[in-house]
Image: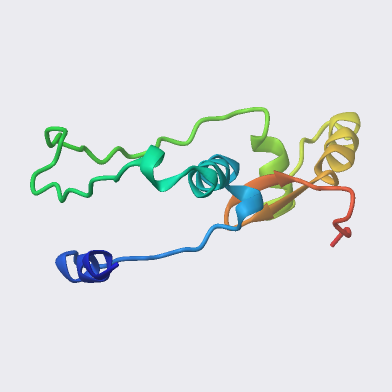
Length: 118
């Protein structure tokens, strides 16, 4: 336990999160199996500190995303700016289709059953 408590000091920043058992079935099953075994049968689990990375460092290049027109673009433009095609039939279809989607932080999401219309 003391070794684990010292580890965060060696990193620039750390974030610890607890995961509920119902969301971590594999670890829960392993913990149950380990707690049911006899200590003599289970043996000791060794703990080692790895001083160097096990995989080589790779160069990472930052990519700039080029916006492309997709099937979502007219819906996104309609929700964002209220623009729609000049053809009345296409505009009507777009309004009905756009009602099924919502924009949040620049990303288009399909509405769920329990989401109210804005």
